[in-house]
Amino acid sequence: MDLIVIIGSGAVGKMTVGQELVKITDFRLFHNHMMIEPVMEIFGKCDGAIINRLRNDIFEEFMKTKFQGMIFTFMWAFDRKEDWDYLKSVTDKFEKTGGTVYYVELVADQTVRLKRNGTENRLLNKASKRDVEISNDRLRREDSKFRLVSNKGEVPFDNYIKIDNTNLDADKVALMIKEHFNLPGKSIGDLYNSIYLEEVNNKDIEELYNMQIESFMPLYEKYHDDLSPAIEPLENVIKRANNPDRKYYFITKDSARVGVINIGTKNNNKDVYYISPIFVAPKYQNRGYGYIGILKAFEKYNDAKEWRLETILQEKGNCHLYEKCGFVRTDEEIVVNDKMTLIGYVKKV
Image (cartoon, one colour):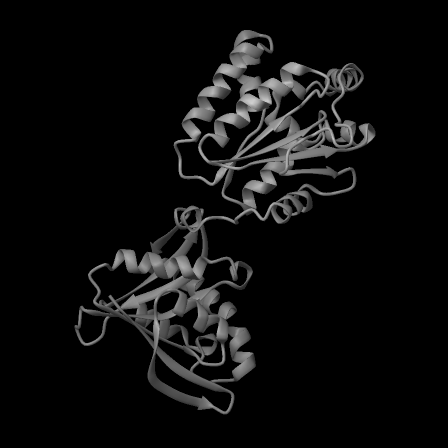
């Protein structure tokens, strides 16, 4: 189990950068105020002993999960031995699992941090900061009382980066961290669990049809083929939707309808299933949603002995997608016009 420790002064952006890292990696965020706020709410003060015990329970349970790792944020006073000891105890836990620990230090000018101290995201997640005037006074006091920025060469770890994010957006910093440490992106499992197939009802046909036109129009403008779903009459879609041997599904990501897949059989042959059509709305393309949609189809129709579909030979991205799903090209080939050829794919189960 890996660990990313983001350290830095108050309001430097540790939590916000962590939130952006969660979007592009399989790490989960455990920012320091996740324990501070409930303890302050219940006990009326920031009790470090209680906070550390609760954090320890989270660490222990999290290390039993299948995630790549955790992002932990911490305001490290480099002139306090107890802070060095505490971080060592935390990192030791993760290293004992065979994981790697990465250290990210963020630094920014105090004037910038005072502005960030009153941002909506910060106040939403940290109730103790909502009296901004008091919070600003506390930030200044912490800056004067502790040394919250490391000296050159002071941090002894191999996996360490120091970033001045005074003028950098959080998403840019997150990408810098990901690329510097070559962190893996979102796991297929994480994406797989957020996508499901939602059966299309008659009342949804118009929405489906409009998405189909939008999705296929770029291909039609490129190839000008008479078979394009971009110019298919609505009646054909309705007929296909009412065919008892076929079903339309929305590919749904976190309740958003991002694409469509049609699945069915021919000639009452329940061993062979066909996918036609499948498409993802332009604004959601190149995110892996079509790939997961096909995998979800395999899961839903797990009695299939064979899967078949057609695609455009000249669209190498589509060919790659289907081959990634386990399809193999057949000898079937239909020349539609001088720009476009349809080819067949089959997947044996």
